[in-house]
Every structure is written in C-alpha cells, then in structure tokens.
Image (cartoon, rainbow, N blue to C red; front, side, top):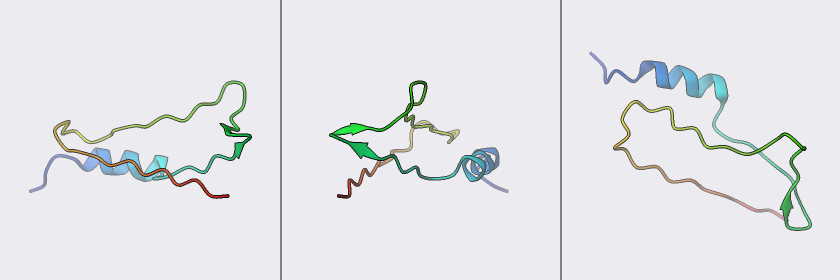
Length: 57
C-alpha cells in the first residue's frame, strides 16, 4: 500500500531536481525562447515546498 504518488516520483526522476543558469550582469543568461519554471508534480497540493536559490560569484 502506498500514498498513490508513484507517478509523481517517476516524473521527478525523469525531469531531474535542479538546474544551473549563468547570471551575466545581474540577469539570467537564458536564450531567446528559454525560461526557468518550477513544476510541482506531487498529487497532494496541500504539501508545502521550499525553493532554494544559490547565487555564486
């Protein structure tokens, strides 16, 4: 018996947990059609999440 969240774990494993984006002159160095998005894949919307942003340099 589980919590019914197996498919969310598989999706998260395929997508991966993090991304690194360079910052140039105080702006994200994304391409013309690129953007950073946050995906919540959990089936329970009541869970709270914490997003950590680390800027190096």
